[in-house]
View 1 (cartoon, one colour):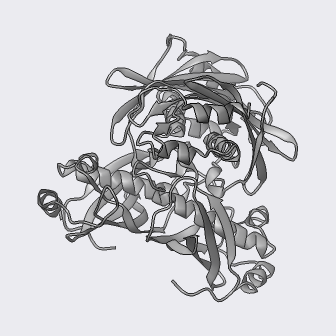
View 2: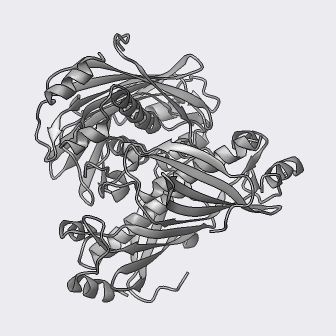
View 3: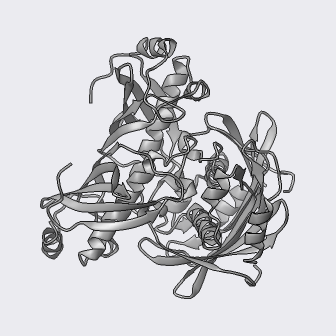
Length: 137
Length: 137
Length: 137
Length: 137
């Protein structure tokens, strides 16, 4: 994990029962859903929601995702997802994430996205979006 | 629950770990996802997959869903979803479901769907689809 | 749906991308997960979290669930889950729910729960929990 | 990704509607749930199901997961999850996965697991389980 250098969004979440599994802890895929909520917040707080990005005809599908699990979260706990942009290129965007609880890092992770049009063809960020994203890195 | 009178599809499924929760049993929403897999199979086996229905410009969003939980399923168990059409109208379709394990009924349920076009406007089944569905009821 | 007569909790949620489906709207099972987040909040706000209830050796598995879908929610929208207790008996508890967006009711629903011990045997609410729940109805 | 050298299990799956998202394709977390179904099958086919492993008092929580997304899967498609053990140590196990459709690789990934007891303390594989796993690598 890189140390965050730019804007870091913080997304507070309360663990849902549906996010737990038979081990009594949060299922590993839930953190990856939380990463998504985290980057949604990051974009919204930078002034350009992903919802608007899609309305403008663009998509940001994942090309890669990864997570390391250090400590488990449990039902009803309050966690915070910290999200930041680790790398921004003309056709590619990488977010890093930390899920923390009371200052302890539970999970770290990243997602790399490519920019496509609605038909899935790889394209570049429109300049004004790239500027908005770059200003936060 | 009505007793099935027409075609009944059977969808075998193995319980995934992600479908369990901290009670150690299958989370109640998983059965409702299985209902969906069940009606997909019912339509495919009747000769008209829901995928084709969507490609033809129609959608079948839910207007109502319900389930009764009698016995829990657990990780790695094999269950079967039995699905049938309980009611077919020009703009509406109701499926009933049973989730069984070794002959024991674990969960029963239903889903009611309306027919819409891609923009969400209520419409009627195209005649050939209605015939296919009716032939199975 | 009954009109709520007792305490009504309000749980604000932002729609996650993972909660949408290929129709472009929120998948029907997501509302049922939100109901769960709603009743968790109701109990917590009444002074007895479901997490504590489980720690004390009790479970509240669902015996029945139902939902009616009037209007779809979409990615990134803010919705509120309103939850209240519609019926409280010695061995059974029924919550009702409304998912609203800007005052419009999108989805209504209910869940009925039985009280069991950790081994799944039906039991009764401990008196102090029953009192806490009853005070909110 | 390593080329598989030992036993490779194949798990056929049909894409569920609930696994799609508003992009019209399978949500990235669904593949990670499929990885889980894949390694469950691998263990079962090697003669020692993960369900039995848990009953014996052991857990295999994830310490790391990763996936690369090359091509999207869509609703109703049939995919196959290929799973194999890439590394086996006394306290650690790494599976690799490929999700394929008609011979095309859609997604690759891995998961690394530690062995713990029911209280989450790191431990070693019991010798007979280690032997069973080793025989498949």
